[in-house]
Length: 84
Image 1 (spheres, one colour):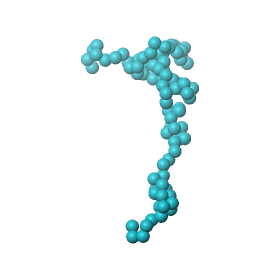
Image 2 (spheres, one colour; image 1 turned 120 degrees about the vertical axis):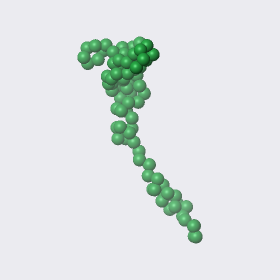
Image 3 (cartoon, one colour; image 1 turned 30 degrees about the horizontal axis):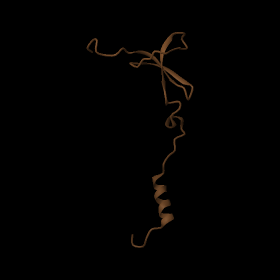
């Protein structure tokens, strides 16, 4: 890597305030705000809207769309015309 052209890469806490979930990882993102982590050290904190703790896909609350069922329901409701 060329020196002096890349942003600093270091530890940062990402916090999902809606779910009350936070995790420590490394990133180029930074923040003026800090939070004290479980190890007693202070890290920059970035608040996020959605994380794996609150996203419906990861929590198992996602709805599955049944396309075949919709077609059958349409055909039952409006019927299939003769010769079609």
